[in-house]
Length: 237
Image 1 (cartoon, rainbow, N blue to C red):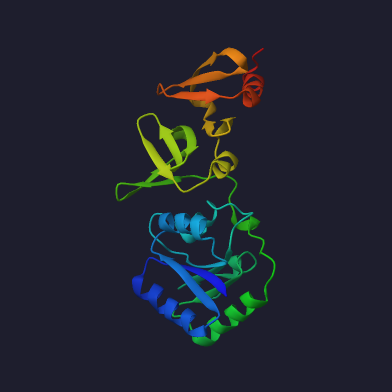
Image 2 (image 1 turned 120 degrees about the vertical axis):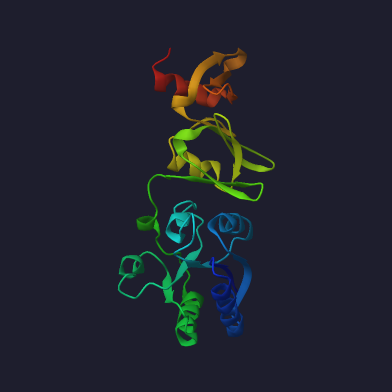
């Protein structure tokens, strides 16, 4: 059974597609989302085989959401959109498939048959931007979008991944690996990233450890493994 996640901000379109998928019998819809923030969380936790993804969504589009995923573990993507066929030419080589709204049963059946035959993941690298322009964060019934240059440090603990600016701390569904690869943040500890321009002081401790004080007065640990890299970066002995 193919596990699918449906992502669309339009409730009617989302429910209609779910009904069509469940009628087929070879697709198990394991979840639905009405925005990209919720979708990032569910993709990471549910690990669907395929996502049926609307392109035009408020705040974060479907294309932008894909850039926030780890390309090594990304599910197959079927775009579901009101765009006409010609506007989608740019996506055809990058997505597994696309469906035009309103979704036709016969067209959906062809997509599902292709999914069943497909054994290898599609190459999404042309779709993935090199760097993130915004970091989506959630909490207190709101979506917070932070620019990478606002973030002083990011860290992970048992409750998730957290980003810290001068005066704000928020939780994101992005992994530390994604933040390290797609923002200016650099690794200073297995569980911590730091923005180089946010470093005010590096205090050297015993046993080859160190501690960073940021411009916002946040304390960030530095492990032995990454202290040498930090010293090399700033030309320190």
